[in-house]
Image (cartoon, rainbow, N blue to C red):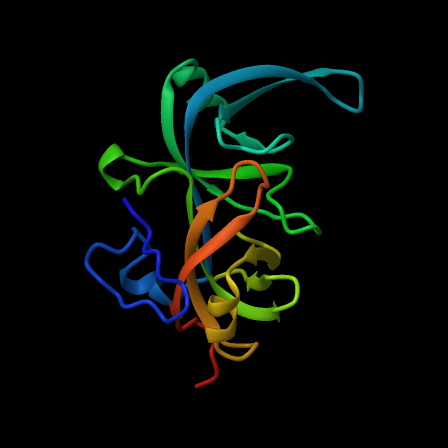
Length: 199
């Protein structure tokens, strides 16, 4: 699936838009990165001196040091096979994808938007025209699994950054992972609503 190239203006919603949560969770905070790769396993030494088996998704486009973790049962069952999956993206202080990316769910082939693609629905907390990035906070949803809020640093063109609403606004953003830099680059945005918006 192609992500629209126009980035300077608010995107129009279309039936061909990338998959995203619908229905009662439309006002939920969410951050998802679609990934594709082969299921691999390796042994990792623990701090206590033991050895732990780690199943992960080997994603060709992933920057060095990024681990797409998989649950043990799923990893053991699909070892060596290709898997389409959703992971919860996390960025480091420098604004690049880094560390362990937590597994969310497998994705059926007909729902996979292309590789690697992300979407975020959250609260805009900072925009830096000089640096070319923005920050979005993702907060826990009522009844959700996320326990603590986190902030993602996303990159965008100057025209897109200038078109964003004021800090504090709810936004929905889509984009792609840049393999060499590890940056999550926004390609389109639209206003959103979130469950904790003022009434």
